[in-house]
Length: 476
Length: 119
Image (cartoon, rainbow over all chains, first blue to last red; front, side, top):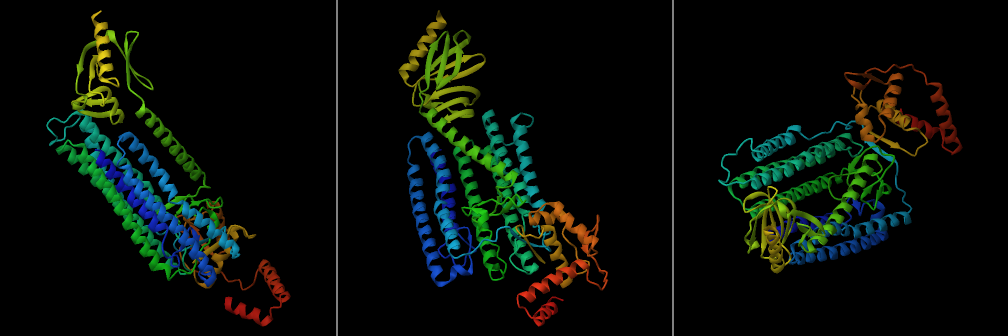
């Protein structure tokens, strides 16, 4: 499980940082449309100015190269963090921090290029918009069926998993002893992937309806350029939807044949890899389109001042919500648009929430799981009283000696190796309450209030002591 | 046909669009009977309010350059009525341009050359 987790993180992060480096820090700036988010123009190619641009570009690329190198080393080192919960927290924090850090040289480059522009007396054409009347609202390449059909197929498989989970149907060919946990897992996995498919539908339509760029006085060139770009994006969206659907189907088939979480995670790694390859192919085609139409570009719109740090589009005079990204691939939102502002606030809140959650989980994973007997109750405490089992309600109690032999599967709750807290399927019995630290061998099994509890304290001795106290109370 | 609008210009946006469409019709870039984008599509494309585009189309329709109907949307008129006279407004504008050109030292010949080019 631990190795698979490392593989998944590496499969996600290595292509991401490589992609950012190769795409945003090109070795040759002369043939690029933008230099660090600033429109490339003839003035930059003049002898003396070109030397300055060379200096800026090579300094930023050098810094980015260092960041890339350090990132790759750190990623490898993270794989060796022994504590799984710490590793998870470090990896998650690293994803956010590294993706921001990788853009730091870019923003520096953007600021220096804008300064250079000011020095050269080049004014941005802020507020100037070009529109090709012939292409307006007429260029669409997304075939509705291309994205709807795989989503419907995915929905059918999800519904089958859901109906199987709630017991309405039974999928033939399931493992002979498939338990509720397995069925729930199948619903959860297929549901999550289906959610992604559903998210892709509005994004695909939004991308298809994005404003057409004007690159030439010739309407046919503009139309062909925008059609090619939109076709590439539409193909990419359709491909992602099919990858998602294929992942749902394969996941269900695998779950019907094997009961092995490592295999499921392996499939997830393959899924992520396929997405990364898809993004790579999209970027490659996009690059070819830009190259192809570069010669035919005669209209260049300089709205550099609307791009904060070369990446965030902020134009209060533009009523559009989505615009083509300057950096990277795809589209971004106009942060001056009311919806754009809302999206920005939600994104920041989500980021804050994620970090708060990470800190909480980090503290929780390092807090001991304590058991004590108090006022006729067995109290399970970790930072707060999680469970209070009334001794008078206990129907049965026993002491186990090897917690590591328990087959634990989370249904809901908290899972931070070696601590498992919440609702679990334990030894194929669904709905058990776990309050276990598997570093402690001994554990107590209590049946009370129609529930089965598996609990232990930070040491075998303490667990034994609590067990003895409870037994004593019961016998009294 | 490419339309350029400048949000910081003294000329209102609707008038900038109207003027360029008229130039497009006159130069033949917009052919008689050619379909124009819908109000919504053009507004989305330009990032402006639909009311502004609607105002442009209403103005062009009242001036007899385009036809609009619910079924076919807006299209350039097949035959634009030729009164053969320049409106008073345009005469005033032309007078201003010629005056400014004369003050700038532009010769009559050069102005006529430009008129020939644009006509």
